[in-house]
Length: 350
Image 1 (tube, rainbow, N blue to C red):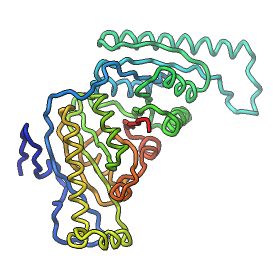
Image 2 (tube, rainbow, N blue to C red; image 1 turned 90 degrees about the vertical axis):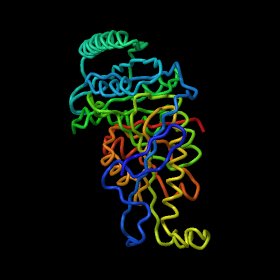
Image 3 (cartoon, rainbow, N blue to C red; image 1 turned 90 degrees about the horizontal axis):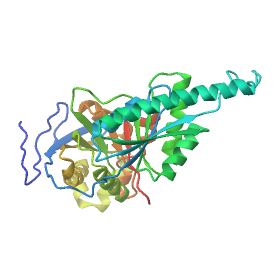
Image 4 (cartoon, one colour; image 1 turned 180 degrees about the vertical axis):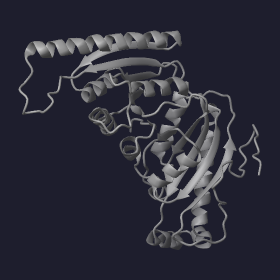
């Protein structure tokens, strides 16, 4: 079935992707997983409070993983970003703590100086690259623990986004990179971009926006509009919910619509909320797709990313209302550290 595309309204149509079943299946086993999708097109060209001086702190390490995060910053097309390139010189670590004697002072000094020289050369090259692309940048070299210093810098500079690169290799170096990401996930006040792979060079950018439809999450979506990533071509607005028998019975007693239609009523309600989110996202000029999955959040989001061929996961925070409690859980830590997915985690002040 072909999709209808109009500028004045957002009609629902059959999904463009295979594998999504109809939302109106008359019967199904209670314990079966169900997924469904509807598609809309948002083509409004009006702006929405765009940040024209968006400040981004990019952690630059010697392993080159930062290149993934920088590539995403460039690919997403933020409006006039200001990138603060930050390299952190950490104290040398003995091969085996407590077994190998401390390094002589001159050895430590030489190691630090070598790291500083390499970091400065790296930062200079990055600044030249960004300048050629018309992106304003600043280079900073810090000393201390990378986790602490990057978070402090982001706070001091009033950064809107902290960008970190990672690696999927199971090495000791990956462990230390992961420790920075874990600390940022738990402690950073800024939004986070954590990238493990670069964006596709010859394919459109697709993203999954996982939402629990909480008030906080809607504020995060407004922040996404201010960030204004203009190069996203498709956004799959995804909501997962998981109902146990006790909750379903409670809903059946309190809501006549649930008693009459069962889970179908919940699915339609979530699709309608996703449609409203799509309307909010009009200024991004991206195609929108609503995906509602009955199942646990983590496998549901993973499946949505696979089926929509999305390279980026966008998350806000979980909510506290009835619909919110049965939908999206707190999954950012899992996807950033456990599965190491490319993640844009939006955060706003409470």
